[in-house]
Length: 247
Ligand code: SAH
Image (cartoon, rainbow, N blue to C red; front, side, top):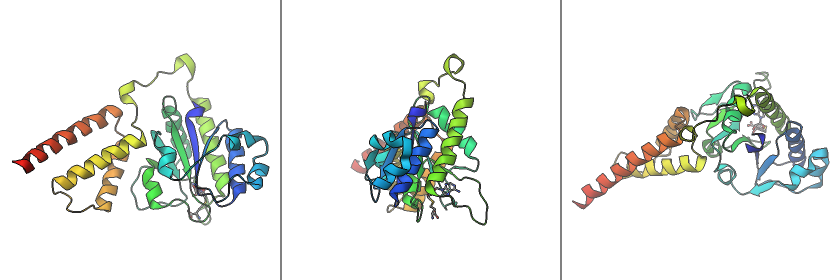
């Protein structure tokens, strides 16, 4: 279950933070670290601060975009100290987030995403996420060091994992109830945008409308089965619109 929980660090500036984050992860039993375009990696400082967790650095995957890092994941939680204008579902309590993450990780990969030291995650990156989480902190100064934020959330994940019923006691989720991957959600939203343009509802690509609809479906948390119903509906509307255009 813990092996399905990935930590993604976006464009980390200080290589030491990568090492400290790896150490924070390993102490809590997490191993899957993905780096999105780090400034300097591999680096001696990363190795030094990883201490006994250099094996995680050896197995790190480095990718160019956040989308590549998370496309197979069914729940992607962006850690952010500040609230954004995008109305994505937001966890105010990290333990609630960890309970949901651990539940999904029984069957599918999930991810925790951390931003850059200087300016966190961009709005586009937040849009790749299904949820956001903030660590409750001092309102006068609430921004943690990157690796410390990783430590706090990794600890919450471990606590949730320890409390989760394991083995025979747990009831596995039926296949139809599984959450769609981010890639499946992206295909759905592309399909929806196409139909909205074809029908004349959107006269030009309108990022805000699309972002609001993305947030709506993120809150609704459709299952794979529900998403395929919606895809079927869109496909039938598409055929109807094409027939109308030809006739
Ligand atoms: N200056 C940046 C903060 C960067 S801290 C900003 O204003 O957004 C580096 C990363 O640590 C953040 O992107 C976030 O992923 C995580 N982080 C720091 N403090 C946090 C908090 N209170 N809650 C959740 N994540 C936090």
